[in-house]
Figure 1 (cartoon, rainbow, N blue to C red):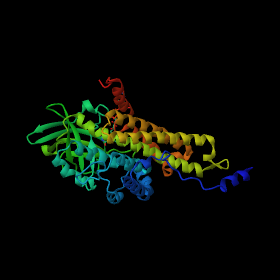
Figure 2 (figure 1 turned 120 degrees about the vertical axis):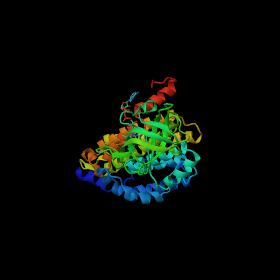
Figure 3 (figure 1 turned 30 degrees about the vertical axis):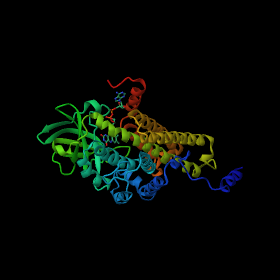
Figure 4 (figure 1 turned 90 degrees about the horizontal axis):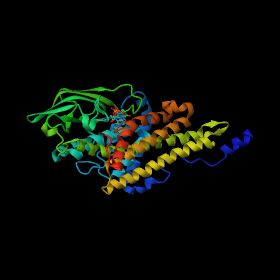
Amino acid sequence: MTNVVHREFTERKPLPAPNSDFYEVYETLSAEELAVVKRVRAFMEAKVAPVITKYWVDDAFPFELLPAAKELGIGGLGMEGYGCAGGSLALLGFVQMEMARVDPSFSTFMGVHNGLAMGSIYIDGSEDQKQKWLPPMARLDKIGCFGLTEPLVGSGASGGLTTTAERKGDAWILNGEKRWIGNAPWCDVSIIWARDLADNQVKGFIVENKTTPGFSVEKIENKIALKVVQNGHITLRDVRVPEANRLQSGNSFRDTAKVLKMTRYAVAWMATGCAMGAYEAAVKYSQERLQFGKPIGSFQLVQDLLAKMIANITASQCLITRQAQLHAEGKLTDAHAALAKAFCTAKCRETVAWARELLGGNGIVADYKVARFFTDAEALYSYEGTFQMQNLIVGKAVTGLSAFI
Ligand SMILES: Cc1cc2nc3c(=O)[nH]c(=O)nc-3n(C[C@H](O)[C@H](O)[C@H](O)COP(=O)(O)OP(=O)(O)OC[C@H]3O[C@@H](n4cnc5c(N)ncnc54)[C@H](O)[C@@H]3O)c2cc1C
């Protein structure tokens, strides 16, 4: 009997390579866009994949990868002019998903720089500010971060920022603290959101990290997720920012929310990429790992796990591809982006947990990749607005009633 089983599994045709594009959503891209995505996939697989687990374990950022990342020419993807890469929001989404498929931290690093920091200047900055800041950021010569969350104010940022801005002549004085700020410990430019003491409205400021007196950053240690991303606790003590560095079209939290809509859009893609990476690793493992003399992928209950995973991924991919179409048609609302972020991060969390389960004990060892996706999913689920906050945005849209106040 054992010999029969053994022959059955050694003499058959080669097994299919793991593939997380079950409904062929990549075929919705143009040939030109697909070429960009393939370039990113080659970079992620050839350069990032071989080194990233070590950086993740060490809580360190892979600065050695930045020169090759610059050559990808994707800085400012989704933004037109000012040296930006341009392209559709669909392309931006696929690139973020592709990065997260290998490493959600690298995808987050780009999401913070591109979407949050550059996006704030692109959406809320004046023409002069765009001309000055966007070209070096698009080249990745200057890297940015986005400081909204505070130690005591997370979900309630829209109404309760404690960091203050006070106008003094042709400058502003900023005081307060920001927490969780991705890239902050080493980047060049921070977008700091603060409450104007005169009118109580939230305003955005461009602060140069390395040369501004009163601005200091401490790295947040001992994270269990997105360990490659360096998150900072920023302290602002009488930080003087010229009026020329106040985002000229950022006059209230509504203008901050315009940026958040676009980055929530992108996090839905990242979460889907994270699930894809875990799923592909799980399929490969199921084909190679033998128990009872057979690959575990031949067991019905293991196939059930894999089928549920690819169903989650496929549902997420279809949803975000439609999300991109809505944006292209000028119809993407805050609620659309919130629903996509909530749904895709929740499905990601479920999928990576099944992948971890499928790997048995090896599922909790970083070297087998799935553990990294498993923990990183926790951060994707909570940052950029938690699952509950996204659902409150959707709930308000469908009922017409706000649960926030
Ligand atoms: C890895 C990582 C990277 C991040 N990067 C950045 C960054 O670059 N820039 C930045 O500004 N911020 C960043 N953040 C902060 C992130 O956006 C916040 O963590 C998030 O908004 C949640 O805030 P909080 O952690 O303070 O949780 P809290 O707001 O304290 O929430 C705690 C819990 O209470 C729930 N809750 C709160 N209010 C309600 C309510 N009204 N109804 C129901 N439930 C509610 C929440 O859903 C959550 O489950 C990052 C966070 C992480 C973990």
